[in-house]
Image (cartoon, rainbow, N blue to C red; front, top):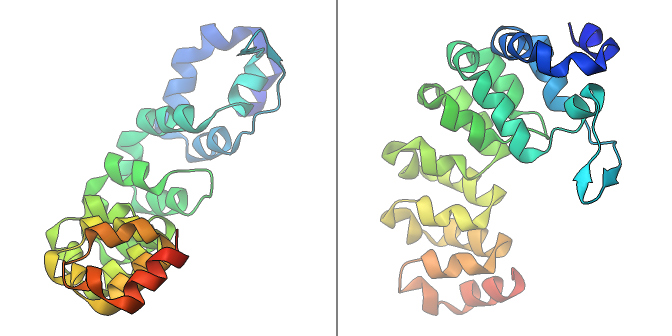
Length: 191
């Protein structure tokens, strides 16, 4: 289908309903569309696109739109969701927003947190209270400390990991750790 569409670049608008259908039901087409790369010239501040370039030129926002059109398929298929979150060009957070029910699966949740600490925000209170999961999230992105439970914002090891990655995470720690010399020094280094 992708090859057929590439051979007929002028038919993009006529094929749009078919393309959306493929995105909703064809895993391979979805992955090819998401893997597309931008390789077209910019003319007058706007990309000059053919169908091939339009599919290859999907930027981050457009990739999220592609995911949105495939949301039902992603929600029904945890294996597809796992495949997507592990792709470097796909936002794990966007996939989790479209299929939050997968976050109940501990294996999925761990893999999603390993890809993006921001998933912790969507994961719910039980994950935000889990020391191991929060440690994974802040190791990926220190600023995710703000999504941790108050108890873990007081956990010295969690806070050290977070501020080492992002010094700004210091503002999300408990008051008594904000005066800790080692934590403040790590925060300064992590800026």
